[in-house]
Image (cartoon, rainbow, N blue to C red; front, side):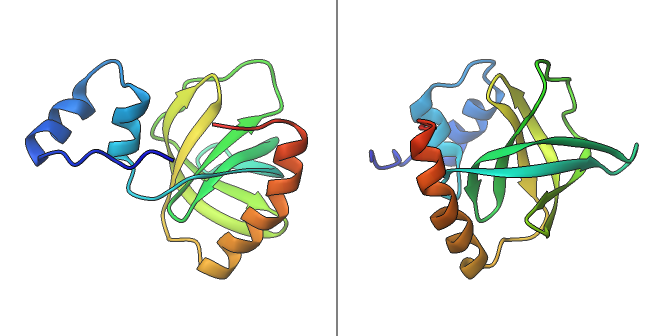
Length: 133
């Protein structure tokens, strides 16, 4: 895997404001490594108490990618959500919406043993469905 390119603080601030971002820029802006996985999950919108079924396709210690089981993705940037995976509840905020799903920044860091468990269980399933980044 390519290593992140060291950049000064000024370049990082400029990069965050660009309307487009390259894959290399995304690697620089991420603080924690992401791992592909595939787990059935549920997203609950806190404010409206709406439950949305779907799956998580990526996980890191401070974020996750949730793909709803629907054809359409609504613009929900900034909404507070709760992700429920196998009884584990993770609170967070939707930071971006892409065709891949909702990028969610978690409020609290996922404990290392839970993160390892999610990665290990989801790796075989993700490989079977060719979920790669």
